[in-house]
Each structure stands twice: as C-alpha cells, then as structure tokens.
Image (cartoon, rainbow, N blue to C red; front, top):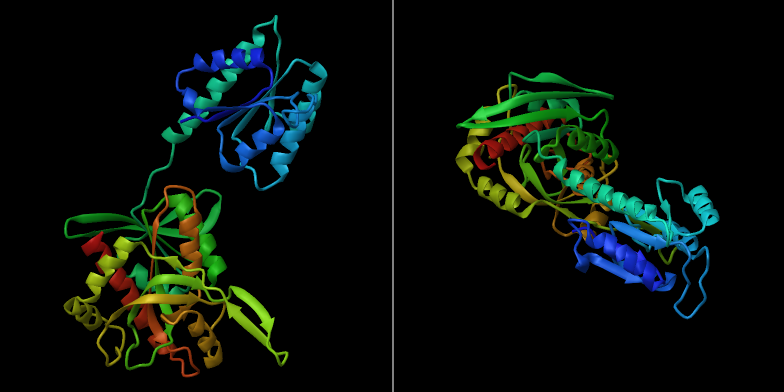
Length: 409
C-alpha cells in the first residue's frame, strides 16, 4: 500500500495529476486522498501517515477564502514544527510560479520538498512527477526487500564480570568478534546439544545500571540481530529466606524502573517519593515455557549438584517468576523497599539492569528480539550482604538459561 494525499484546489490540475497517478503500477485509487485547502489537509495529517504528499504551493487556508500564493509553504512550516501532525515520507510541490519555486526550495531544501514547475503548455512537469512518484514507490519497496532478518539465535548481556564468566563457562569455544566502529568486546560461540544448534553472541557492559545495559542491548541488537536477548546475573530478593534461597532464579516476568515517579511533600513538609511502575512484560509464550521448567525439580537438583567451585547453600534450587524493579543503586533500606512494595505488591526482588534491556528490545527497529531476564538471588537487600554467593548465583542463572534454550527454544 502506497498512500498519497493531494492538496489541490484547481479541478483541471487535479485531473491532470490523477491521470499520471493512474498510469503508475502499484498505486490504488482507494489509497489516494484529496483536499482543497490547508485546514482540511491538517485534519487528514493529524490521523493518517502518507507515503507521499503532492502539494500545490498556492492554496487557500480554508475553502471559503481566497488562494494564498504561499499557502503550501505555510502549511509545511506548521506540520514540520508541530508534533501533532504525521509528516509524510516524501513531499512533492507543484506551482506555476518560478519565484515561488525558488522560495520553497530555499526554505525547505530538497531533503524535505521537491518542487516541480507546473505548466498547461509544457508536459515536462508530467515526466518529472511520474519519475518522482515511481522513485518513491521503488524506495519503499526496496526498504521491504532489504529489511533485516534475524542473524544470531541468542544474544546474552551481563552487567559485571562474575556474571559474564558464568556465561562463558557454558562453552569452550568462544571467539572474539570485531565490529567495525564499535570498540565493545563481543564473543561468539555455538550451543550444540540434543541435535539443536544455536548461534550465540555475548557481551558484558562496562558498568552496572540501566543506562549501560540499554546501550549495550541496543548495540547487540543492531550489530547481531538476535532472535532472543537474554540477561543473566545476580539480584536481591525482598522476600524472607523461608520462601527464597541463595541462588534461586528469579524470572523477571514484569520489569519496571524503581526510580521513575515524582517527589512531593507530606503535610509536615517532608519529601515523599511516589514511584510509577511502567511495567514491561515478558513474552507470554516464553513465560509459560519457563513455568514448565520451574516444576522440573530433577533438573534443578542436577544444576545445583554440578556446582563445583565451592559450597552451595543448604536449600533446594528453585525458580520464581514475577515482578522485579530495576533501581539505580544497591538498596539496604527497608523503608525504601516498603515504598516500592506499596506500588507493586507482587514485587519479588531488586536489580539494576533488566529494565534497560527490556526497554531496548521493545523500542528497537524491526525485527525485535524477545527479551528474557533471569537473575539469581545473591542477597536479601539488607545490611547482611554476602558477596560469597555471587559466583553461585551467576552460575545458576546462566545454567538455567542454557537448559531453557536447549529444551524449549
């Protein structure tokens, strides 16, 4: 579909334009709209995105008013500066006046507006319009034909080195990948098991936090076009140790920015922070598949038993699925945690990066990857933090991710 809006108040001129458009393959008359004046055109442009605008430079502001020789220029000024209008992909202007052509070209340039001199006696304008429209249709078709497809099966992002080392332990065949004009180090390998092969790329952010994870996620997406984008690593549980254990994997089914909201004042003048939970959700199909893995106690016991570097906690490894907030720093304050829990009573834990990854995956260009964050518990968001469980938690999240990839994807 190639949608066109024609703004033209002269019947003969409109008929001549329509004859040219009817001769072009790929244009459907149902996809062509027509207006006589600026006011009516702006109503169209508020609600509809057009591939091409054919604009008479001399048009009235309203049907009842006289023609303004620069009405089209004034219309372009307004739609380009006001956010409420959907700017057409291409704009071709028509006018019989050479002085108006010069002024329009000087104000907008060829990148915004191509201006053709219309004439009743010279048919050169017809060839120029025909070629201009055909080029724009060809450009749109080319964008479809050259649209990127998925390249890598899996991309994995981590925030700190202990998490990244747990991912690199999943394969013995990692190779460094150089990307032109991008100094970030990337590594690729292949997960090959049970007759399945997955092309994998992984990278570790230079620092912790949502900003770093969002930037690296977007670079992974743009450079490697993965079908699935995973994040593994460590998180803090806000539950008690009777329901959560060290190393338990939290699948982030809903991610939200714990720092988003507003600061207001209470009646006594003290500051109050009111968080806003703009939740980003895990893909529903993926969530259901992970719920199936959650019940595989034999597999989870095997993952725990295969931990070799040191002692594992004395609890059974478990998977929990639910809401996790991304925060800007390490939190050891129960009052802050209580405020976050008021906003989201289903909150399971806190971490610092997943929202940035989910946001990038949701807002990148097509084809978009499916983002999946799995983080394991290394502390309980209190002053009794034990860094000694970070390697184990990094291991369990990476290993659960690997088993999910091999068994379910």
